[in-house]
Image (cartoon, rainbow, N blue to C red; front, side):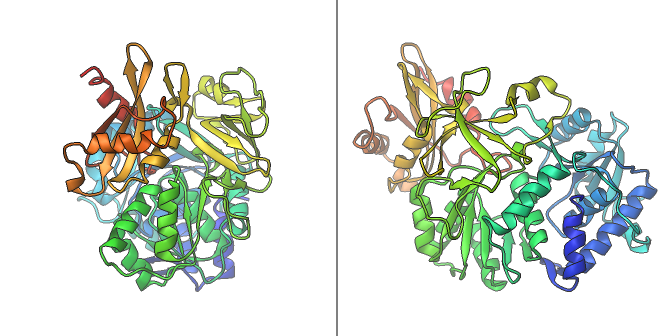
Length: 511
């Protein structure tokens, strides 16, 4: 099968059911697959051939899935780009991927045109553009849909995600049709337990793995309706979920913080059936507050782009275990290994080490980077770079990123443990704990705090927060300094970019 079959199969089974609900209307599965095949026809007419790499620079509107499945139906490889990408970021991806085509919405034409000029990449525009340009969408309406989608092998690359994560330079993660379909088919039933009448708020960016695989692909495979929300705000999300009677919400921790803030301000709470969290660890205090506010369970999961976005999850019917990411998804094997070993040396139950994964969901490798690929694909396992532990029942707890581990005076300090304590303080809305250079200890523990209210940033507030942690953790763990900030730097997928905080505050560590 091809990933394009996710839409094709559901369109055959539920042609008249709403696939996408958007401010511009309701769009059925039958309509969407017809549009995708028309786009495939126009792409072929413009020179796109099976195996070509086609970059996509599109906002989250019904055009995104129409073009996405059109590229796949034409047999090409999708390279999704965030609509917020700068010219330099687009340039990097086009260069690194040697992309032959860039499909761009007309509103983003300026940065796209500047990026493609040095490469000779063919620029294809969706929507009315300047004089002299061809509107693919308009051309698609006059085109005959392709009869048959291009045949692809299971191990052919379907999508290349460019991810910088928390480590810096973007790398192209090659996911095959097998990789993606393996996880999608399992997530539809466990953990998501989708029903035919479910309505899901789609507020996660479709250019990134969580939104594309867990929301769009899993949702389309199940045949549910997805309410598209191009830009997230807590107030608008609550209103949309109420208006469209959403039953399911998926988001990252920062979205849950914004939802709670909107609820606290008196916004109407929708009647949801279940919520899912991923992208980063959800503090237990936040999880409990969300469950209290919405009156339904929050199921936390864990994954990475390199594993087709799913590794482990809490899910309906599984005994809930607070502070964990649940158990591995069916047929995916998770282990805990010594983080400094050359090979994979698995540790006993209960010990902290690097999370390693194996299964058909693991990527084919990093595009054009065999050296880095060899570092993370070892003995059939993928090294995630995350630290965690497995208990006797197979539940996975995430301790933090290996690169974020703080070494203070010979002791290992895990930031997440401290962050869990800090979010329990009433003055703390969000927090990131980092290690900054120290001449004697090697690293010192600092907490970067987004205050719950402006008045929480007052004389002595930092000492009070430090004392809060000091009373609850061992002496070597509590932060010696608290810095207040308006917002934490976030990546497109919702992860806090701690390397930016270390760069910013590390230079002032001696002051």
